[in-house]
Amino acid sequence: MTITADEPIVEKKQVVVFDICSSSNMLEDLILSQNERAMRDLIVSLKSYLKSESAGRGFEVYKFIGDGWILLFPPNVTGKILIGFIEDLCQAFKRKLKKYILPHLQSEPKVLGLTFGIDRGDLIRMQMMETREYIGRPLNIASRLQSAIKEKDKNPAYKVLLSKSSFNGLRLGQTEWKIKRVTRNLRNIQGGNRYACVKLRLRT
Image 1 (cartoon, rainbow, N blue to C red):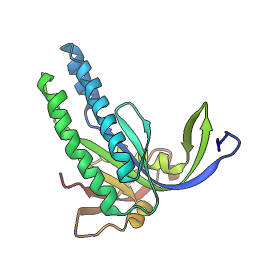
Image 2: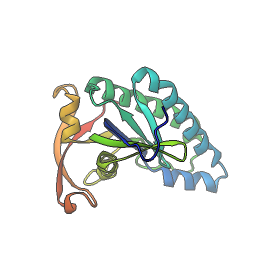
Image 3: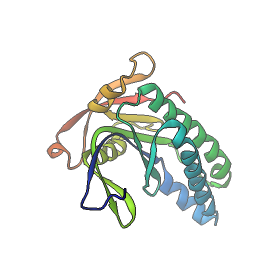
Image 4: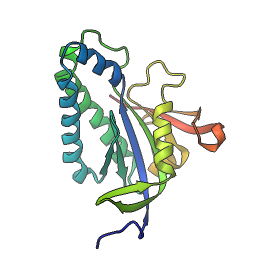
């Protein structure tokens, strides 16, 4: 049955937002040497990887956001599955970065890698202009968390900020990953007050 804009459906999701570190600096460098196609090749290769992994890993590739993606996992996904996939994604990214980008850079950025923000909660799904769209607070929180990783961290690559709700829902083992409870100022979230979250260092 086709869902119309007047028939929203509420779905609980684990929302993962990730971003390529220093993408603007790399693209500027590539443009100067007339190798900007290399960034396009990297993005297309990552898109193909996400598409090929999505069915077997049980997530939806929701939206491309310029230099990263929003992925939607079911609310009951375990930490081992979700974080395990993220770590595999990081390894794939390293290989693709080495293949497509690094050979063309005149000046390699100090920070290379991916950063992630994760939140869990209700999203409203609707059909808009024949495209499935979602709205909801978890999208905003995950995006803000991803952006806030670099706060007080000179090396934010391959790290994740999770909301408490997401962390608790994933049932992550305390001994499997390096975990630290932190606070961040998230723009337009809770009046800008300090937001308690969990920082996780990926095993890459």
